[in-house]
Amino acid sequence: MASSCRVTPADPGLYGTPGEVDVEVATVRAIYEAFGRRDIEGMLQHVAEDCVVDLPGTAERAGRDEPYRGPDGVRQYFADAARVWAELTLHAEDIRATSEGVVVFGHVEGVHQGQLVRRRVIWLWQMRAGKAVRVSANDLGEL
Amino acid sequence: MAEFHKAAPAVPESVGELRNAVGEFAREHGADDAKVMAVQLATSEAMSNAVVHAFVDRPQPGTIRVLAGRDGDELWVLIRDDGSGMRPRPDSPGLGVGLPLMTSTADSLRLGASPDGGTEVAMRFALASG
Image (cartoon, rainbow over the protein chains, first blue to last red):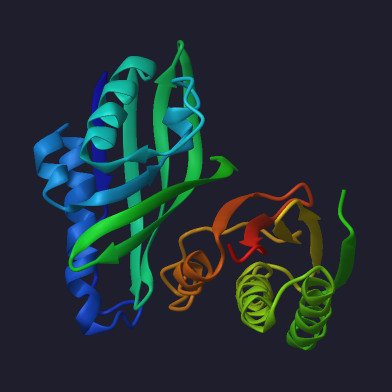
């Protein structure tokens, strides 16, 4: 699998993001960058032991009907992504934080079974003590 | 099948009306006060998102539609709009900031493309206490 991630540089002047949550934005950004490098251990640094990774775009194509859980789940997600996608790029275009979590607007581009897939996605992240405890990807339709 | 189905213009006045109606539906189907509040809060956030953001490129606001039903020990709620979908908008500071609140309030939340052409927010709330 050719795997990568494009993260749009942040503009701290936009969005009115509270200062206390800048760390969480940086953490989420680092996770996307780690995925882009296919750096599993780098990603796990930012993921809680009980993290729930709900990424149905890959999970369902891998024949899985439930989220990935914990570090072993993250490793399985990487393995599944490598198996089902010939290419996969996550585009995190707009990262916004609130006191309740982090919202990422973007899109994915991939090749699955020879077909180009381009979907608009919103990722919702829940954080605890500087680490991700849950992420869910929401497919908003074809790009 | 939805046991609750209401539609209204995507204007601020509709949010309160639909919030009260879906809260009443939740109470009639076994939700306690805290759960009714959670349903109303999350539904209000979803509707407000639609009112504020879904029709910015339209001369007139469209329609928001709320569907709900009971599935065993869960209540499900769908909020649909026929707007232009949730897209990154650097000019819109508030876009999306209610989503994490909805995530933490509902027992599950999924965003998707609405059959009406805009966005669909699907939430589930557990009714059983134990």
